Length: 239
Ligand code: FPP
Image (cartoon, rainbow, N blue to C red; front, top):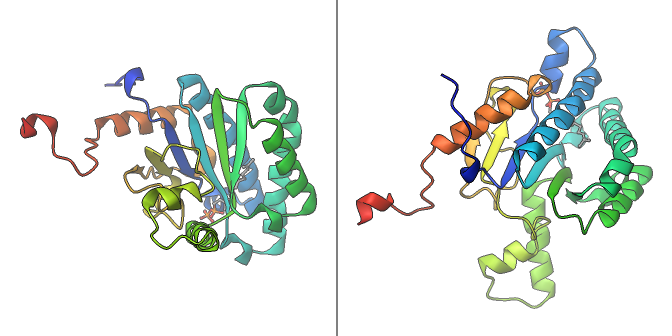
């Protein structure tokens, strides 16, 4: 039976590791980039669906610090797709009420993409309805190393969790409540390791280009079935 989403218990922040674009393409005898292109279409659908449902923040892992190992053609192709997506939707982003954020060292990206990302993040920084956070040249370990370096430079010796949090790219975001990794791989692959300490993890087998609004709803329903205790015990047992 199809269960309904409890609108009072939505995850505030959902993170997505968009895996399986290559396999999706291979199965169709298409080049890998066709998989990434279909991946952008999935990203658009899922972002719209999340916004319509009332989710506040979506984080996507678009390009990891390890993805530079891929062929130049694939790397350039992914950056071109991100650039194209930003250009095509620039007016909607800037005029709408969605804030675009990035995490990762974007200064290493192609200049045109870097400039556009700076522009769009600056122009949308006061938008409040909905946040889309894109991991680009992002890796959680290098994010943490950067945070500790910043703290050391500020002369911090006794470092608190809040100090670390304040130096993360995501310092203004709530932690993800739910992480979805498509394609059946059950690992986090250096994605928001500090922030995901209490995230619920969900690993549908479907490849990312096939993921749609129904799958997002299913993931949220699964999330709502979970018993989130944050290290506590169940309230009834405690009384
Ligand atoms: C993983 O699939 C996917 C990627 C490394 C790239 C995902 C990037 C996009 C969909 C572009 C994002 C666009 C915007 C606008 C943010 P894979 O190639 O590892 O798949 P495989 O494991 O099947 O080979």
